[in-house]
Length: 410
Image (cartoon, rainbow, N blue to C red):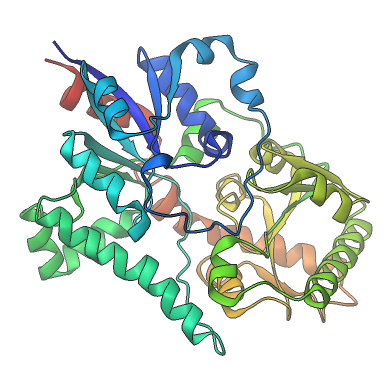
């Protein structure tokens, strides 16, 4: 008899890069299920979308330092379909969908369907998705990017309707507007009712950020630092759309950024802590921000201790919104339109202060602090629609209860 197994399904060149941002949910799965399989299907990609990006290796201290998690988590990376088939012989997999929808990922989706793997999606992140546009002067690059991302998503949805690739059985989301938009549209409402959308069912739950801060009852009153959430100006998506920035652009950008961070540190008499993305290169960033503390994989912990949080665009800003920290979003002349849009979307939806790196001089401390404090009252609407849409309920508990009832109780 086959055993039901919960598996987080990824296609990652570096499994450590996947684990770091999901550590809270991984811990909770291990507390509530007998085992978690991290099923890495990287060997089944048709091609590498971002072969020009070197993936750093590094060790995963999160697993290395936790004996309970090490015993409960099994990592499996099959080299071919035969090895995967042998592995699945005595297992019925319930997969947490962490896969892309690029044409390069299609073979993985075909294989999931072939092996009757049921998929669910943990979409309760709470952040805003940024739409990437074709940039002026980069028509060909933009068209290739759109072909690989936007068109491929539509094709994959069509294939799921035709039952060639699996749909998500359930999409757990903290974005209440997804359900509102379905309700407002007769076409979407009809498609959803007939199970013709990519997700058969959509369940509204509170976000991971909500769960972390409300379940643990974290004290957010300590505010002895300014945290800057670093932005990777050479992210693979940006490179795909416009190529690499010139050395002149990069140097000017970092000089302006560092000057601003030094100035804001002096104005408020607080140290600067730079938090970088789990996939970024810590040693390189330590050299760039040599006058500041630079940390990795501890972003939430540092936002909690912040008097002020500064960012361009980062999903981690959700922690600062929920804990009602003062927030500044930055823009720069050295960023392209897509990168600027990431700042603008939070400025517009949250009403937070936006500062231009090239013309911010002579900041009035009293005026700025009053503005930042007043902005906090704008957070509630965003929290209610994207982070905590169903009150005080713990999101992961609803997710696990639903999974157990649907897939694990005979």
